[in-house]
Amino acid sequence: MIEAWRTLLYCDEDHEAKNTRDPVAPATRSKEALQKVHTKRLEGGSQGELQINTPYFGRTTLAGLESDECGQAEFLAMSLSSVRRQITACQECSRLRAYCARVAQDKRAAFRDEIYWGRPVAGFGDRRAPLLVLGLAPAAHGANRTGRPFTGDSSSDFLMTAMHATGFANMPTSRHRRDGLTLRDAYITGVVRCAPPDNRPSPTEIASCHEHLRAETAALPRLRVVVALGRVAFDGYWRLMADRGITVKPRAKFEHGLVCAPPGAPPVVASYHPSRQNTNTGRLTPEMFEKVFETVREILRR
Image: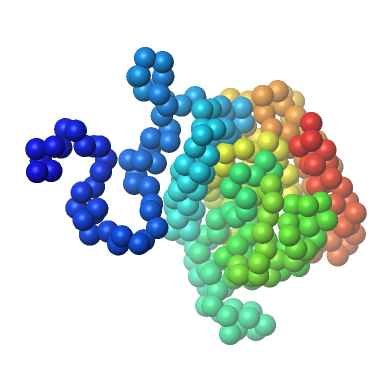
């Protein structure tokens, strides 16, 4: 009977799955249904691709989805989840992978009872964030241990204190992946995804990881401003802009508090990295760091 009526049925209906599906299980969209989120009905009944407005990175807003916001969110979540899986499975840089694995095995005495993450670290935060916080790389006993950027070390709490004070985080600490931390309007990631020896990735390793940064930012829908934590992150921002054909010459030199707004690009706010070297010496103070995120709030209000 199904074969006889097949031409009149929806082509994306999986009949075998339908017959074996738990009748009380929550409904989920098929891949074909999710793909339809990217199409809209045009005048005359024909279908066309949704116009994707991309003033900055990858997708920002999908025009015509006002009536299907849930579908848009589901598709974007699926896309970002796929990127995150690719990042955590990466084995590209043998030196970094060997170092991370060795640190995860040897451990620091204070964490000897913990199971280290020991893999590449993907970003985390609000999937619809207008703010991207771009760091350098996981700390050997921080994110390389916990599996989340800026989590589990002094730099993490320094960052979260500033973000909490300006409304981008629900708490001023970042200790482990299940600590209840939630970011609002912000997404945190890094230029490099594996902890490098002495916190110094090579130019080749930075270049290899750039593909992950491109993919991750393309999967975030509404990025409007970037905070670059340190010179390497600042350079990473300009590399992203170059990918989109946006170049500025002469390019501004990195300095704390600098705001650059290239035509057709999201503004970047430069900041010293909240490393111990900078915070313990007073080069970066809590007041200076909070001011960076206050500047971001001003930009987002425009």
